[in-house]
Amino acid sequence: MPRFGPGSHDDGPSPFPLGMPRLSKLSFEWRLAARFLKPRRSQALLASVTLLCGLGVAVGVAALVLALAFLGGLQGEWKTRLLAANAHVVVRPVEHRSVTPVELLGLIERCEEEGAVTGAAPYWEEPGLLSSHHHARGLFVQVRGVDPAREPAVTGLDGMTSSRSWELLVRAAETLSVDEDPAGGADGSEAGDSEDDELLPLSLDELAPPPAPPVLLGHRLALRLGVSTGDLVHLVSPQAELSALGAMPRRRSLEVAGLLTTGVAEYDDILAVVPLGSRRARGGAARIDGLSLSVQRPLVSAQVAGRLAERLPPDYLVTDWTTTFSRLFAAFAWEKLIMTFALGLIGLVAGFNIFTILSMNVMARVTDVGVLGALGARPASLRRLFTWMGLLLGGAGTLVGLVLGTVLSLVLDATGAIRLDEAVYSIGHVPFDLRFGDLAWVGSGMLLVSLFSTLLPAVAASRVDPVVALRSE
Image 1 (spheres, rainbow, N blue to C red):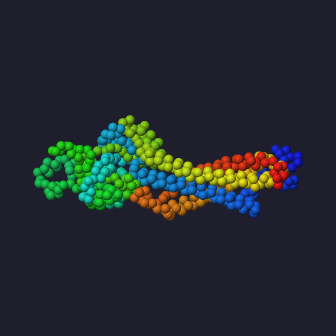
Image 2 (image 1 turned 90 degrees about the vertical axis):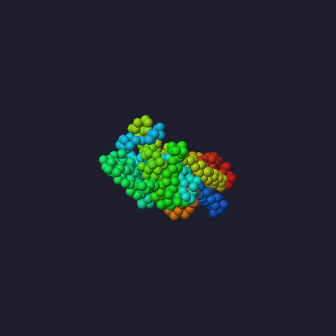
Image 3 (image 1 turned 60 degrees about the horizontal axis):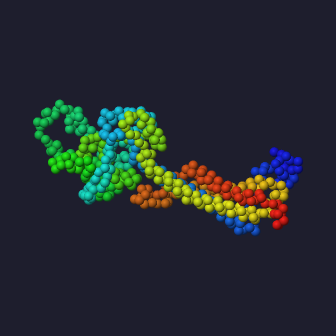
């Protein structure tokens, strides 16, 4: 790079005295900007205002980082709990008909041909009223029939209750499958022995009513019903059955095998899980409403559902969890947008402060600007000088704010210092999930605000007439 001085072919006179070591324009403007941000001893007020401006930027950035980390943590916590209690993809007939056992086997085979599918389990669902000795009026419940042997590969329901309670469901499902075996008798014996058995008198065990099927209740539902493990509850199905008195609602007693804790208050309030074969729990025949699937990467469930929809016949409807809970996550997105906009106003105010500080510096350093102009500094150099001042001030505040917000987020998440009422919010403390993408756009956004805040003061400094500035001194 050529040396500044007489005879130089640079784009203007050199701002350096003759004989000064060769320095780039960027180095000159950057160093002078850093020096201008340190007011003289006689400018204590300007120094205080500059410091407060930097702190304002830091506080605004830290607040925005904390808010985004909180919303990200809350959304991640809800997503984790919802996916633990629900399938990633659901396949069911379009006309809400029952899936036959033969049809189910073919459906499972075709779904498992998709490499991303890691598990498949049949299910049935229906609403009902559940009553107990302590709550005779009944409470609304959502009854879900699951295959206890296959369900752990799809959802985490088995981990939301005790192993003994889940084992009771497994044994009940095995017993029901034997009882309903068309090739055998009631106890699984061969059909050829049934004629001899009819000649024998019935034992007391055979005369006794069958045991009540087991059911797992959400712990909040059990609390409202006033029941615990081993108690009986009564399920009333909305589907009626014919009797001597006409159409009557179906009613069946169930034994509470254990309690479920899903972590989602809405589920813990209404969920009742029974073995898949115990469709008889409401007095009807066993049937299957659809197939629940799990995938390797839940975030790409929509793409997997699309491929399955192309693979399966058109009379099957394929939905994924992003569609099922679309309203919830849309509400999260709007909440995040509104929170970002509200706290982003702090950054905008910090930008106004940078504008004020630079304007005060231009007025306080009119003589210095005039001297630089007299030494040959071009207007473009003066504009870059004050632009660097704003960027250095905003950049320092942004860096401090990012570090402060990051540290606070990590500490608050690790310690769980901010407690919540779990009965209301479904979580015991405020979670924080810090993401690099949020830090990147918060930092870049604040630097952009700082840059725009420097435009008018920088243009005003470049228009200072050196003669008038030196004469006023």
